Length: 194
Image (cartoon, rainbow, N blue to C red):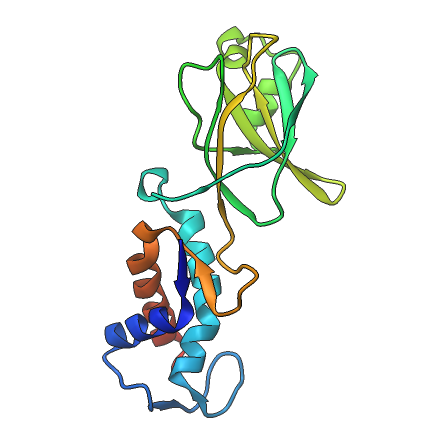
């Protein structure tokens, strides 16, 4: 899952069909005479994050398990803290669910509002599994609902982390998306160059 930035820069340069000594006169960041390799290395983390966030769930082949416990908020509904490096949900399943959920809704979406609106009469909506990312008070949590067993537990919880981690020389990118990130970075560099 970790890829060296220098390897990715080489891949982007191959897509650009340029050589590494080429100098860019001006960039959108305002650095005169920035080398092309520096420019590529600078845009890679943002391009990688956007590419991973926009990818289809089926395109993501690697993810990390969420550590930590959950707590019940009300019957059938619980929550757990999200890791600081959380970018997107990969998979979530409670032990009493028949299938996993791979898409988390936003807490400001209509689906979320319908689910927790006490006046809503749609019983099927309230019983089916749903996961939401809720932000507030400086913290993010994963809220889930649709668990009917009082003894249920989190059977599977995975997420995709932000690409930029502790090591400034590496990015955390699912292997299945490395080529797409390289191609998107090449497109971004072409847009920047004047």
